[in-house]
Every structure is written in C-alpha cells, then in structure tokens.
Image 1 (cartoon, rainbow, N blue to C red):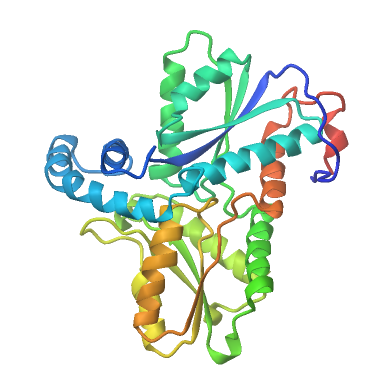
Image 2 (cartoon, rainbow, N blue to C red):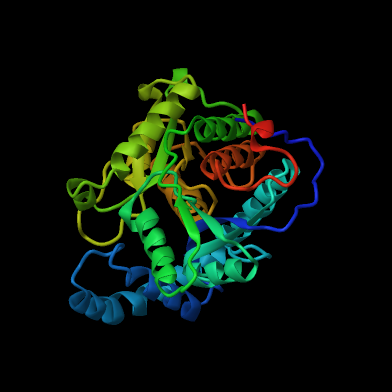
Length: 356
C-alpha cells in the first residue's frame, strides 16, 4: 500500500470516520503547579504504578510531588518551545501532515489527537468527534511497542468514555506496529538523514549507535507484558535496515523511576561506560518515541550527553525522533489506511485506487 505524496489537497466530503492519534501527554505550562497536576494524574494511573492505591497515594502526595514537581518544571522550561510543549507541538504537526496526506488521497476522514494525561484528554476528544458527526473511530496510539502502561491505559480511557455514551462509536484499535516495514523504514530514514547532515559515525574505529527505549519495571516483563520483546524486535529490524551489526549498536532503556529494577541495560550508565572505555562518538536514537519530548530532548540530549562527555567521550549526537518527517508521515498514513480498510472513507475514489 502506498500514497501519492505529491497530489494536491482535495476537499473532503462529510466525515463519518475519524482517526484519533493518542500520545502520553504533557503539562500545559513549564510551571511547578502545572507539572504537579500533570504528574499527579499520570502517576495515579494504576496501569503506570502497580502499587496498592491507598499506600501509593500517601507516598505520591507527601514525598514525590512536592519535590519532583518543581524539579521537573525546571527541566520542562529548558526544552519548552515558543509554540508550547515539544510533544504537543510535534503531535499537532503530525496531525496536520497526516490529515493533508489522507485528504490528498481522497480519504474523507477526521484526523485529530488526544493525550492520555493532560489536555486535550481522550474523553473530551471523543465527545468532539461525536459532535463532528463521526460514527467510526480508529484509535491510533503513538506507541509503536505495546505496553500495558501506555497502549492499554489509552484504550482503557477510550472504553471508559464509551461506557458513558448511549449511542456509541464503532471502534477499532491499533495495538502495535513495532515490526511494521514502513515504520522501520521511517526510522532508518531518520537516522540516515541525521548522518547525511552531521556525518556518519566511524564504526570501524569503535563509534556506537545506542537505541534507547523508554524503560518499564522488569516486573511487567515477568507478568507477560510483550514490550521488552517488541523493543528488541524493532531494534533488530532497524539494525538490519541500517546494515549495521549488533557489535556496532547497543539497545538500552531510559527514564527509570523509583528503586525497583527496570528493564536493563540502562541508557545513562551504558553511555557513560562507553565514554570511559574510550569510545570517541556515540549517537543515541529513541525508536520508541514518535515525537521529541522531555525524555528525548532533556534526558538524552542534555543529561546523557553530559554523562558521556564527563566520562571522556568526545562527540555526542542525539538523533531527533520521527516527528513530522516525510518518511514517518507516509508510514503513519500506510498504517492507518490498513486499519481503515472496509470502512466508508473514500471521498470520490474506491479504496483500491490508493492501495497496492
């Protein structure tokens, strides 16, 4: 299946089908109060923190939020863009680019987004889609690898909203696309683009590419969460697409929170060890993040960079996420189109006209 990316934008007819991109969320402002409200919602999700709620809320309200809120606000302030939070800015660009691509290929669909935490939240956006006349909704989480703490909780919020609707939508969900060829190709294109602009690492001399995924507690793997396996699958496919070897790359996990063991190896210690071992250049890419955010810009681009340089490394590159790159929007359109098959989405041409 492919799209003609050069066709002019066509006017769409009345919409009955909607595509809702879902991302994690972001504070509304880089202030202690806004960050605290966001973290309180995020960390109160039992899918995210699997500790008995009564005990966890005491810890959260008395120990974590009073200290983590102001500290996180400073980090958000360091990455905040003139247009707002990076995650929101890039998500909105993805929505607009996907909307144009689908409409240009005669898909008469609504395209919008919601955040699992913060605004606009999933229930409010589903209500907006209903007001806009949508009868069928495709839920498209921007998490390529499935995790109960990301994908499942997004679906929970959507199904919870449906429970309060008398006249419900017809719903489809995209569970994961960790091994989708178009997604892997978009990742490879993003890495190659960075190397075209900034030079390719000298792998023969020992330079490394680190593929850093968001971490989750190891306990989730033991309980049957497929996230770790899918991260490894994505990494293997990307390494193959880049024509590299496992020796030239490292697969790591970042953003550890709390004292429990998380998926290993951890990103920051790994990069620090590489610098201390005399590795001259390290490039870090985050395949599991489809849009740049605090975890990629500040944690990788600032904190991990400092760890590497202070350990003796010479050259560090944080490769931008997919964001609204040409290859990613094309891949996103392909994934969405596959999941829309059978629904009345064409404005003027039969669906087979844009499929191959």
